[in-house]
Length: 71
Image 1 (cartoon, rainbow, N blue to C red):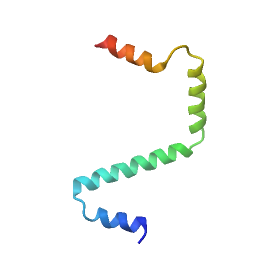
Image 2 (image 1 turned 90 degrees about the vertical axis):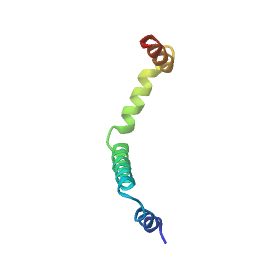
Image 3 (image 1 turned 180 degrees about the horizontal axis):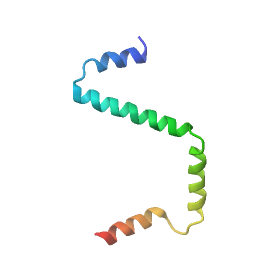
C-alpha cells in the first residue's frame, strides 16, 4: 500500500476538528511549495542575505535589544 493510500486510511479515522487542521496544513504546504518555485523566490532571499551582510553587528542582537526596550 502506498503512502497516499495509508494517509487516506488514517484520515478516515479523524474527527472534524482534526480534519480541518490537516486541511489547513495541506493548504499551507501547497502555498509554501508554490512560493518556493515562483520566479524570484530564491533570488529575493539571496538579495536580502547580500544586503544584510553589509550591515554591521548581528540582526538578532538588534531584535533582542528592541524587545528589551519595549519591556
